[in-house]
Amino acid sequence: MSKLTVDFQNVYEGEGVPEETLFGTWAQTAWQGENPSEVTIRIVGALESQTLNHEYRGKDNPTNVLSFPFEAPAGITVPLAGDLVICAPVVECEAREQHKDTMAHWAHMVVHGMLHLQGYDHIEDSDAEVMEALEVRLLAQLGFGNPYEAEETEQDS
Image 1 (cartoon, rainbow, N blue to C red):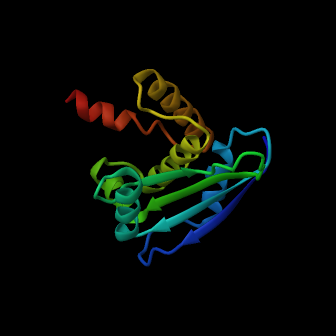
Image 2: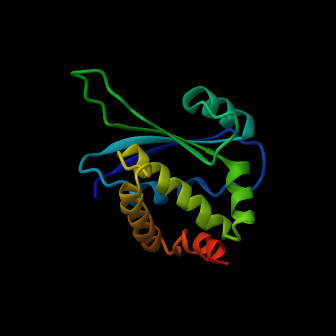
Image 3: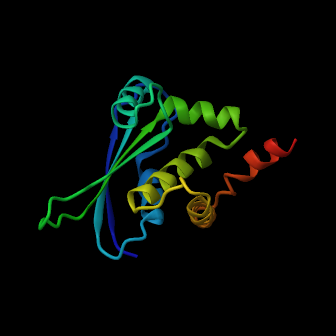
């Protein structure tokens, strides 16, 4: 596993954001790349998340995590994976609503976002299955349970 450098930016003014070192551990675990790279993880409030979600995805609401893969110009090789923007209030709210451990949900958002930076997506069902299976395996390595089990249980009832 190659080294991943994490540039951590916390501009959220509320409580409950995990320690910076945890973000590094979570991101490094999810980094599948052969070469060293760098990612910026920015923790934001609802307004910045909503603004970015609207500008880049056309959705006028805050969201849990936005992934911005770095796209180097032709002929330029820079070891940058990209940026993750994680909305603290949305992560906290989702954890409560979905009856999930807050720390586990934070870890899931980092792993999920890191996989997006590496080209994984969940638009097609088959791709979603691959991505979710990898998320479950990586989160288990970090000591967290399957983040999709709680949702499946709720849907079954």
